[in-house]
Image (tube, rainbow over all chains, first blue to last red; front, side, top):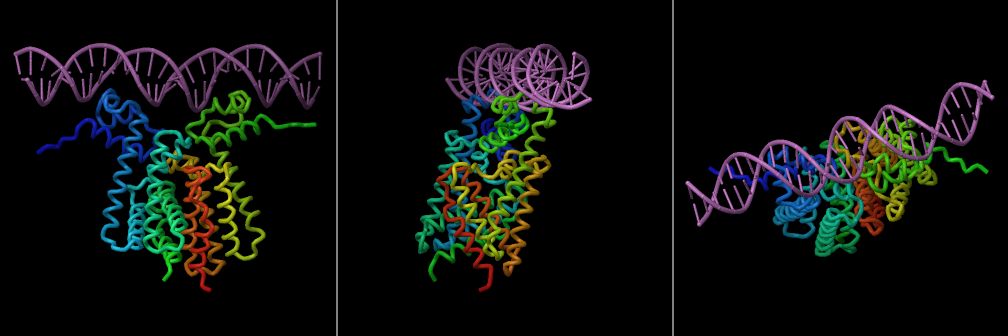
Length: 189
Length: 189
DNA sequence: ATGTTACGATACAGACCTGTATTGTTCGTC
DNA sequence: GACGAACAATACAGGTCTGTATCGTAACAT
């Protein structure tokens, strides 16, 4: 049996875990190398700088997000149910001890300058989510899809933020309920 | 004429501005001293460490928040209108270039360990806001005040977060509208 | 006038940070 | 078996960070 994890993979997994849990500025490259059991030069062989590693992590998280989004919403035939399913899944996730908030929110907070590479990746990701909400809201027959999408967007990031600030006992227990109320208010019966 | 700002005041104002704008970890004590035109030893004479300065800033922000909260809600006689007034004012604020998110959210993101002093101050502040929402929701006759309060709470922090991530052109233009929908849904006509 | 206190400026210690250079070793391939 | 790439380990350079120590001075009170 092959328990093969290449040094690059070990490094990346460790960096992902540490960045997500403790923050980008709090974790140094020495810590990543030591914790993953690789040499520091191996890190710099695969990524030209710490910022590139951060960007790589964020892009991977973006992929993971959309994969999960697809999994979560694919069984819901109607756009309205897709939105509800997403917020139910998000509510479950943010009540989980594995949740440490949103990697994109976190990077934007730690690097508020919008021209920082990681912040830009975060912005693009969030704009995509926003656009997806808009599209689903439109398909669901919302009177004002843009408004509904943005209101749901605020709920989502509020829930992520609650998880990072409060841990598992956060105020997001009724996230999906709030989403349902907003959706129903925007879609004519 | 007395243009008296004591060194401590100059220092504190500068630290507040820099922390809020650029983040706590990104700003060093040397920068604060230089930018405010005081000696570094003066900083350490008034605050035993950078962490104490951060805590002092957060406590001052907590006071400011509640002063503004009082100002914003005092003209609304009914608890329901107090809630609405708060979210209208918040919507206006987060569309302002002076808004760089929420100082408490920011510190909790940069120092996720809940035992960090700044994180604790942030938690206490947010719990107070949550409790105030609950109280107002109860007084307004909400069927489930706890649920409404937490849902409004998510909206609030989502709006703060949107401001830090997107700047002035953020998705919080319909924050107050969302709050109204949630409030109306929870209060029997 | 004299002493005390607050202050600005500067240098410093020790730790940590990113990124590079070096050395030896292991592993796969020819 | 020999070669070369990837790797771990370590040391290092240059910068930045927090916090301290030192020195000279200006304001102020007694």
